[in-house]
Image 1: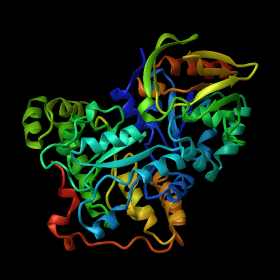
Image 2 (image 1 turned 90 degrees about the horizontal axis):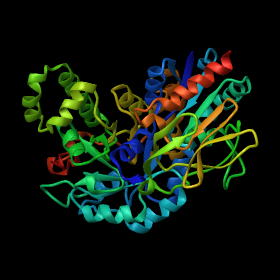
Image 3 (image 1 turned 60 degrees about the horizontal axis):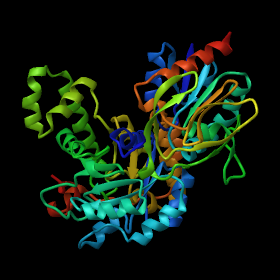
Image 4 (image 1 turned 135 degrees about the horizontal axis):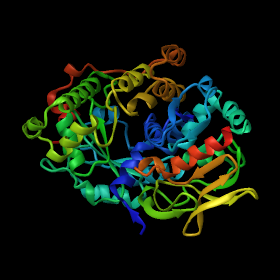
Length: 191
Length: 294
């Protein structure tokens, strides 16, 4: 199973390391051609405005949209969730617009309000260490979507078909269970 | 239990900035230009380092109305500088909602013996360093991110290169050492032993390491990335150049694609003049900002 990590900006190396730990072949993706032979893609945490600008600049918007429409799984963490969402609170436009969710940016406040907490994630773990950094949250999930975790009544992990998003940063922990879950998704969609 | 200000949350914030460019700005308008160009964060200042250098006198924390103006203007993280050792300036900036503090040698030090105890703060700190010992002392005090000191406001990359090369070479040396040699090396470097042990095991700093102090062109940014930087701070380089908007975009692209020379060539064309530079030997020793901090 070959999984790419979009490597325009953000926590790329951490995702690569964790994907390899769960048994995938992981590669950083800096050019659109590198998407060709991938079975799945991770869009990492970073600054969503920066990543989005660089995606536009290098033709990644269309390429990743095609990738998603070909039923290849995509996992977005924090900024990655914002990039995947169809709707963003307070904005008329969206970035990739692939996943039927509505998100709010910086929804838990500024850096001084950033936090970590142990939380249950349905089908993944009873005690997942979730690190929230100027994190967004998911306001609504489309009708085919599943809510996998909530924090204080706010949706923070959701899945819709072959798309998975987390408002927090699994890549900042040593806990590979969400990456394992994603790898299983990739296997499921490949067969 | 929900925990704020943990080391993971603070260091994680810096991890999210990797591969990006942090730009100095002095008002809301510049902050918006930086954000539109793809900056991962902005540093809110009253004056950029080259103007601080030119103005002389005591440089303090920025006018808080400027910091507030920048906080309200952009959705990306906002950093601000406090004087070395001035924990009250740092607390004031933290209370304002600044996302990241720079205990910076660009400002006039407030304490000639001690740096701020950064562990006590909820927001993360970045600190400058010239070598591994200095970097690990700052991390020991609680810094969540390190940057080279370089020589700020000069547009001259030579000092940042020296600092990054020194740090990387020392890291490689420590990694290759036998365990028996570590304590003596900790003494040589003036570094906390436990942190040096971590460098020995992992072969890298325990926090993100950016380049700063003298980055003036897209090629400078790419050079620092190839030397091992996780990202780049650009101070005076952008808004002292002829065409800040274009310059900012070019530096962002060169930082992402730092080994793609054709791309760097393309973005570097027609940029206009970079900021005027200063030869380091022309700066009196007492005026070298990198000597500040202990």
